[in-house]
Image (cartoon, rainbow, N blue to C red; front, top):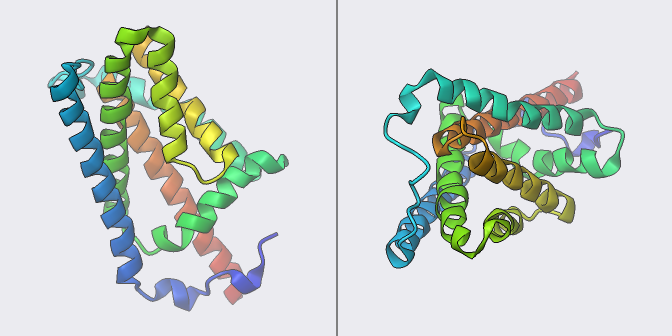
Length: 216
C-alpha cells in the first residue's frame, strides 16, 4: 500500500509545474535527436542503412497499423501484470516507473504525451532496430539480435529487473523484424509509440487516483 504521506494532494496535481514538464519534453527531444544523429552518422560511416527496413508508403498501409497493435498486445499484457502482480520483482517494474515518471506525466497534456511517445518510438527503433541491427548483421544473426538490445537495456537502466525486461522487449522486436515478413520498421515504431503512450497514460491515471484517495 502506498505511503499516503508521500502522495501528492489534488491541489498539488492541479498546480502547474512548467519546469517538470519542460524537463520531460527536453529530455525526450534530446534523446530523440541523439538517436537520429547516431543512426545517420553511423549509416554514413559504416554504409549500413538505418532505413532499409522501412519505406515511405509503409505508414499508408492499414496492415502496418494492424500489425503494430498485434505486436503491442503482449506488452499491454505485461503492463497489466506489472500493475497487479503479487510477484515483487514484476510489481517493482511498475512501481519504479510510477515513482520516477508519475509526478511529471500527471501534469503533462495528452498532446505532450503523444509527442514524448513518438520521440521514443521513432528515435529508438531507428537507432537500435534500424541502424544497429542492420550494421551488426554483418557479424552474424546472434550478434545482430543480442548486442543492440543489450545496449537498449543498459540505456534504460533503472534497476536490473527493468533493464532485463527492456532487453527482452527489444529482443522481441528484433526477432519480429528479422523473422516476420509482416513486420517492418514502421510497424515497430508505431507499436513502440503506442505502448509508451498507453503506459504513460496509465501512470498519470494512477497518480491522480492516489491523490483523490488522499484528499478524501
